[in-house]
Length: 465
Image (tube, rainbow, N blue to C red; front, side, top):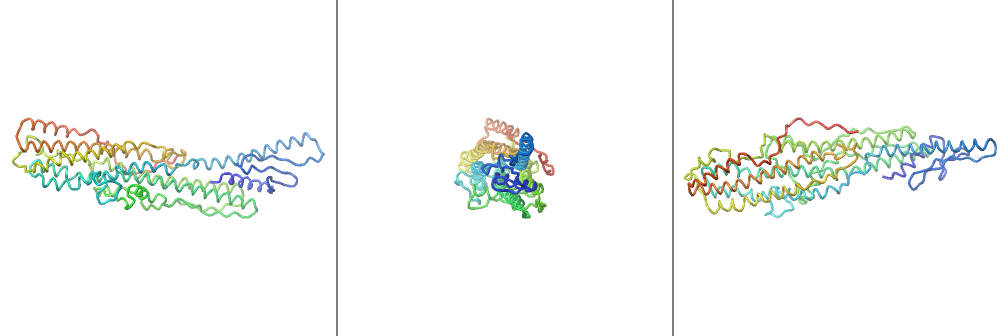
């Protein structure tokens, strides 16, 4: 925005209302002049003068000059101060490029967890789903019967859908980052537009022409492509889909895509005066602020829905593969279990440890995404000083805990499968004791489960300021 031009035009309009015409670097009425502010920074000005014709008291003349100069200088300061107060919330806006490092870093765990039909920037051997997608078929060929059959149905068959659900959460996080970037790319243009139109209206008025006042270019739908912005970083050749494993969850989650929000911005038609134009300008800036609030509230609700999904009891992402009594050591019957020793060893020695390692890598990357500076702005703008950062961070922490929990479960599954295989070969009492201890430990959980959050209807946060 051109703050200097706005200041000068506003003061020109004010002086026009005071019946002073502008002449170069001063304003004039009859034989009296008032200096105009500096064209370099819009500061100063207001010094009143008139030729002394020798009549009257020189002291009175000098007193009048001091008082009137003080009056106009104070008036100019008040105008500049009013402009500064109007613009204060939209000065020092977040840098949209500040969200790029976060999106790029989040792209790695997103790629790790992405379904195989999603083109992302990752090698196939770095993707959890590349392992889990074929694991069920490998397990079906490797073993069957008894506790091994329960193990395959209760854990391996669910592993892929759980990993994809965690991928969905990364995309919700990424969409929020992309939405914020898109927002802060657009807000400065809207502020510049409002400032330019106010400057022109002040100028028209000071030139004696009726000012025109059109709607500024608003922020309608600028948050529409948060997923698209994130996709450009993570999957430049294909849009990232959201594939939730539960229809109920899919119904409650509202992704920020193709959002067209009516901001109810009233068209301004100010009367020709400094005060009315200033009021219209303040209204436009207030409308921009309202728009930022509305758009960021959409993001917040999306994140809150994601958090409710991640911690929902109705969609339990903790798949307890010890759930059947037939998995208890004292219920294991080697005669019921049939397996290919080499295939089974490949699963518990190679495939499951590799999946656990990739889950751990995804968790580590996400745990480092702690930079909240890109969100920072004026307290009165949007959802406050850090916008929806707290909701974003809450969902991030839930995902960290979920990934840690699933990695622990995967390690435990490998250990259990190894012991199941040993139990199938022999009835050694030590193997049975180890299975008992492992089963008890699994029942106790990993300690990484996120706290289950109550799901309430979403309410907008209160506006600040």
